[in-house]
Every structure is written in structure tokens, then in C-alpha cells.
Image (cartoon, rainbow, N blue to C red; front, side, top):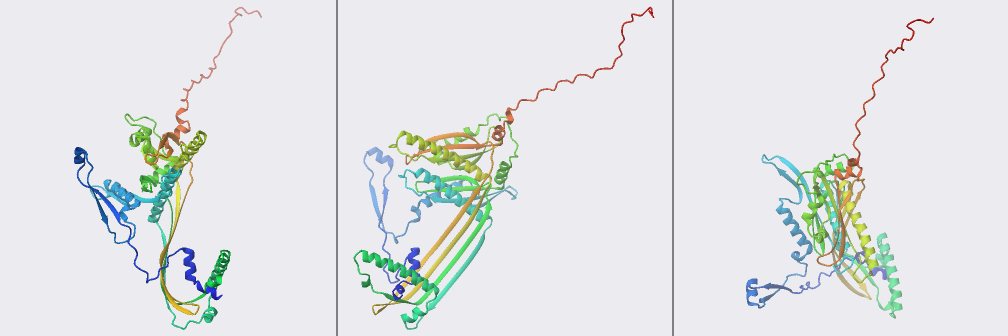
Length: 480
């Protein structure tokens, strides 16, 4: 078992988890490659009038470190777009309260944010679906933050350990004093070493030439903090307010208010009254969407649920769904047609799910964050040579779990728009569908407006009168 001693518990766990180990005596971190900042001098007008190229000054910057630059991150661009959007509308993240002229609160709503990376490159045939997945992930992340803002259960645990052993190192005694955890570590290390020896032998190497080392921990100073957050809440009434995306990531702004939740509950109960008399000059929901979105390519960037008012004055719930066509121009017509058909079905399903999640959905969340900082000094004896090594391990573990469930029955969902377009930047073919629901479409689906008017009631015949009738008198002269 001595050979197993060369792998301590820390080394094994770090090898499994992939955490970095650095000697504190290591050299300085190398500087990042120089970045070139290209600036154009002179005005566009001057360049146009002379027909010559503008002079370009290339400046070389010397960053002081090798770490990512915040301003160059895609997520930072999304956050700038988000902040500009909210600022123009007098909104902010979190709870918003509007007051009247007398200083009394008249309106309260919540603004949330979530973002997610697009997992595939723009050249991948499945990039369009990766965009949709990123939107759904960002939307769920935003809902998770909303749930935490309502109520959360937080547990925290911190541990600190200081250890120093100045006794002489006796490998035999150390082996005898091993506790259960160290014995398990020895078994894991022995198993790994045995397998490595077999692989070395197969490669023509002599495993015995790799000397065994005994290790003793001389000192340790470590700190560990574990934080657990749990939350569970209904998210009926939470909807998309706006979304932003580039080719790397997607960001979503959500909004919630008591009014939206009440609307969602009315839809779920199916009790809201419908209006059927057109309002003069009021466009239909389809016309409103067409005027707002414009070119069909712009539908590619519409996600989630919106609430509009139809031409009768009813609140109308509108859901956008889309799906990528997994085919290229090199594929056969049959394959393209089948891919389009499948994408259309998926787009309708995604739009339908948006309805269900707005009306009745529950989100469960669990976050676990662990922070570790550990410094160890170990004494190593290998082939009679005694050395000391110092290891520093700093890292964190983040485990985030968010789950959403929804189930509802909705009568009267209707398709008001289908579209097919190519992504303006990447060329991917995408199909989509826009669904709508309102109290009017609900009643129309049950044929409420098609029922024949009631026929006027026929007058009831008068009851026969009991009159007295007499036969003619032929017996003026009695014959009897």
C-alpha cells in the first residue's frame, strides 16, 4: 500500500474535479497577446470627396493582465441593450412602483432579467434551434429569479480548518494511523495505479522505474462555505416584455403584475365575458402585429407572450413560436419538405406552451454554491530523497436547478399568422406561427355566435267556449 501513498485525498479529489493546483513559487502569469485597436481618422465626407482611403491609425494596447475584457463580452452588450430599453421607459430591474400626483402608489409591477448562451456556432445547421433553446433557458432563468424574489429558503454553512504537524515523518506509522477516508483514498489510488501499470506495460514501459513516494501533510489552512437556496412559487401572469439576441447569446426581460396574474386566472377559469361589437377604427390583432413587426424576417426575433386588445375591445393573448429547418440547399426536396413540416409542427407546439406557461405554471428552484480556499504543505519521501511541496487550491462549485411545470385547458386558440423566412445574418431557414386567444375566440369556438335566433312564440289557441246550441224546431205542431 505504500505506493498508494503518492496520491493524497486532496490530489485524488482534485484530479476528479479538475480543479487547478499551483505552486506558490510559480512565475508570474504571462501577459495576454496585444490587442489591436483600429481607429479611422478624418471625416466620411472628406474620404468621399477625395476618393482616397482614410488614413488608419493602428494603436497597440498593452493589457495589464490575461483575463477577458468585460466590455467585449456578448452578455455585456445584451445588458447595455437591456438598460437602455428600461431607462427609456422609466423602468428598473426588480419591483417598480408608480405614484400619482398626490404621492399615493397606483401601480406596482416586477421587471426581471435572464440570459443564456447559444450553444452552437452560426455555421451549424441546428443553430436556429439553439437560438430557441437559449431563449427558453433565459426565460426560465428570469422566472427563477422572480421566484426567489417572492420567497426563498436560505441555508449557509462555513467551515475553517487549521492544521500543522511537526512530528517526524514515519511512513509505517502513518499507514497504521490511516482513517477510513484515507483507506478509501488508498484503494482508489491503488486501483488507478494498477490500471496505469497495465497500460505502461502494454506501451513497452517498465512500471517499476517510476519510484513510489510517501507523502505526509505537514500543514493545512483551508476555508469552505456552502450556500443553499430553495424556492417554489406559481408564476401565472409572468410574460416576456422584450428580448435581445446576437449570434452568441439571448437575453429576456420579463414583467409581472397582479393585473397580469388576474388575467391569467380568468383565462384559466374561462369566466371572462366577451365583446362582439366591432369598435370603429380599431384594427384587428393580426393587423396590429403586422404593423409592429413589419418584414417577416423580423418575426424571427419575436418570442414569448404579448397581451393586446382586439377589434372588439377584448384582451387578446398572443404567443410566438418558431423552429429551425434542419436542412441545407444540398439536401433533396423530399428531405427539405419533411424538415419544414416537422419544424411547423414544433413551432405550433412552442407557441401553445407559451400560453400554458402564462396561464398556469409553477417554478421550483434550488441553488447550491460552494467556495473553497485551501493551502497545504506536504512532505514527500521518494527513493530516500525528502522534499516539501506547497499546494494552493481555490475554486467554487455552482449547481443551479430550475424546473417549470404547467398544465391547463384553453378553448379558442387560433392561428393568426404563419411565416417562413431566412435568418438575416446566417441564412438559416426558420418557420414560425403566431397563436391568439381572447374571450371572443373562446366563444366563437363554442359556436356561441352561430346559434339560430329563437323563433317567435306562436299564439296559443283560445280555449273552446261551452255554448248552448239548439236544434231547429220541426215540431210546431205536435205529432204525438
